[in-house]
Length: 262
Image (cartoon, rainbow, N blue to C red; front, side, top):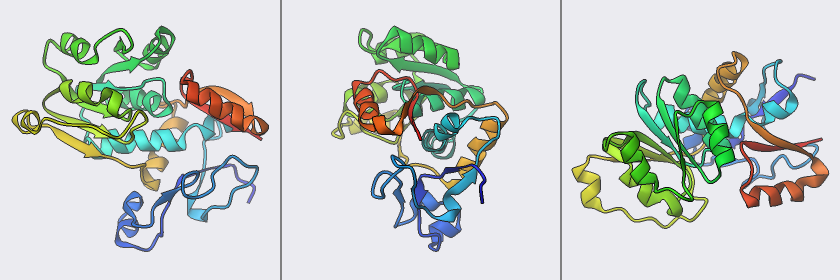
């Protein structure tokens, strides 16, 4: 009682085979705070005790709030699903998003080369500060052409995709032979096509990923405590400005997370 905690956003039954095996994000009853369950845009929120995890004392409340969803999701995508290996080339779409800024750091933690995309020079500069080796301004450059140029026409081993329709073709075309595309979202639309011949002839893998497990959140919280990963907070607004925060997010100007403070 009284301990400062963050909330694991994924809620599961805790009793099924998936939950008992530690794969709680595969629970048939799995859902998320703020999605099918009322979320944290309030002074108080009720959730299962198992979802409450102490956060590192060296973090502010605002920094701690920016960790769970994005780092847990990015870790599950890159480490668990894509089986990221040191020395691989990784393309991170939407580097200015919360999950994109987390993905850059995780890929660099694993010793990978990161190519990041964003829509403004300001966001690209911040992506490089986080560790991105190369950047692509997707509003004025062709992602696939730049990736081919930067990799000497080889392509990347892993594409970190969460944008959807707007980038899908470029994402597939940017993969090296045997490459893996892992996706967790479709913010620009969910309709996408793939030339199956391209898929099998280049031996590509397309992987779906949804949230992450509670154990993965414990792992990233430990790495944050050690200073190996750093939450990225774009701005902090009071709870009463919730509508303003959402309007700002819809403009797509943020880099990292927007946090509401009570």
